[in-house]
Image (cartoon, rainbow, N blue to C red):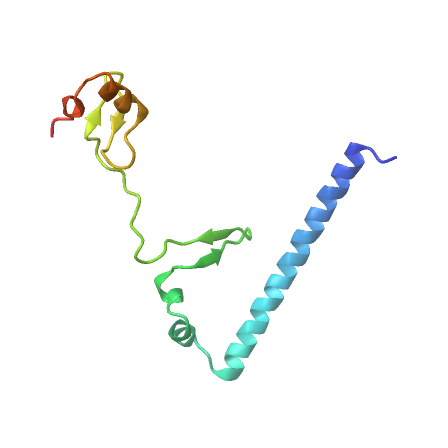
Length: 121
C-alpha cells in the first residue's frame, strides 16, 4: 500500500518532469518557427498583416511561466470606477448603475425617497 507522502512526492517529481519537457518543446517549437520564417522570408509585418489582432495586442499571450493571459479586447469598455451618486446612512455607496442595492431598496420600501440619499456634486 502506498502512503500519501509517497504519492505526493511522485506527483511533485512528475510535475517537475512535465515542466522540463514543456520548456524543451517550447524552445524547439520557437526555433522551428524561426527557421521557417527565415526560409520563406516571413517577417513580423507579414504576421501582423495576416492577423491584425497581433498588432493591437488583443488575444492571448503566454508569459515565461507558461500562464495564459487574455489581453483587453479592442472596443470593449474599460472598467473604470464611477463616482458614487448615492450614499446610505451607514456609509454605503452606489454609483446609480446596475440593480438598486439592497440597502437602498429597503429604505425606499420604508417610504424614504431615493433622492434624499443623493450625493452632492
